[in-house]
Image 1: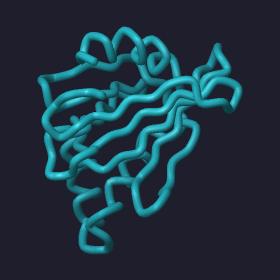
Image 2 (image 1 turned 90 degrees about the vertical axis):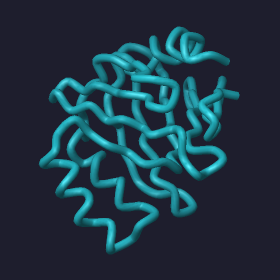
Image 3 (image 1 turned 45 degrees about the vertical axis):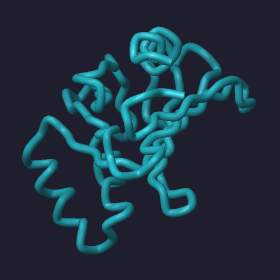
Length: 141
């Protein structure tokens, strides 16, 4: 799957969704979003670095790293909780960006040391309908 395929297949579901919840599953940060007009839930299982367009937010989140270097990125989700996603894009081969209505952009750094930095699952009426896996070489499976 190409980045363009992802944006076409998944972007239309992601845009217009709101953050439904976030947490940890198996020591991996998880972000759940829900579409406002469709019975669609999208789950991001995250094993990559995250950054934002807000230096003060990055500074605050980075202070959490000494507590647990694997899951401190979950703090970014507090800043976007219940906010609608306005757009999704790729900056380049290795950076997926979600832009929220509160003007925060979260960047998922997909070229990372982990083999599967990001998994995206789509559920409709609580049933899995599709999913994809980002690999650390920038490809999408």
